[in-house]
Length: 88
Image (tube, rainbow, N blue to C red; front, side, top):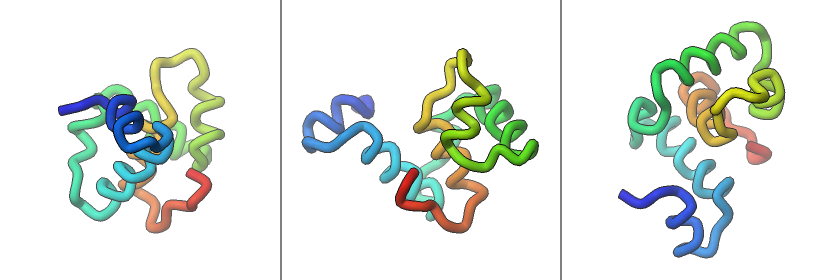
């Protein structure tokens, strides 16, 4: 498969838009989260979520310096949130 940056360039969309589309695919069961996020990253994001860091930005700030992207956070949150705000 192609990486997200290549897909974004080909479709003339931002990486963030592609990541949001993937989050919707995860939310609706069309994509498997484990294909996109490594288990240890999933665990770290969930740790932050359970500590009441429930927005993408808050989790990213709390995990600053760790190799976890905004997209990975969006994708994990898509598995637990019933609505994905358009601001993701």
